[in-house]
Structure formats: structure tokens, C-alpha cells
Amino acid sequence: MEKYVCTACGYIYDPEKGDPDGGIAPGTAFEDIPDDWVCPICGVGKDMFEKE
Image 1 (tube, rainbow, N blue to C red):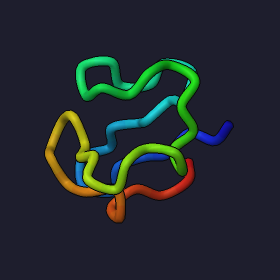
Image 2: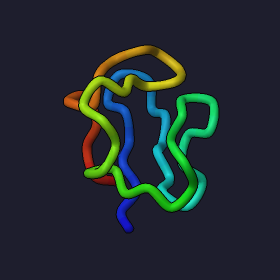
Image 3: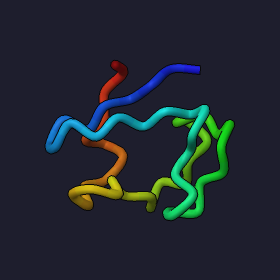
Image 4: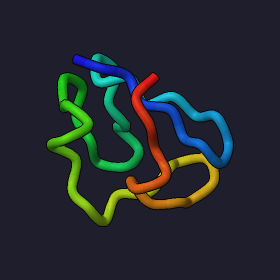
């Protein structure tokens, strides 16, 4: 699974870790995250992320 980086703040979404605080379980691919999920650091939407 690919890692994705927030182009606004540099946060890296790692599918192996997920985003437990944001309700995203470890093992969740970026493509499978709900569209309303936001960056846990700066709050921008999924559309601001690019493949690392």
C-alpha cells in the first residue's frame, strides 16, 4: 500500500498505521478512507494529498 503526503503540511499517511484518532484503522488504504476525512495535522481534505 502506498503512503500519501499532505501537500499543505507534510504529514504522511501511512496505511500500516492508519489514523486511529481520526477513526481510520491500521491497514486502511488511502483510497478506502472516507472522502470527508481530513489531515489530522492541518485539516485539509484528501484532495490535498499526493502519493509519496
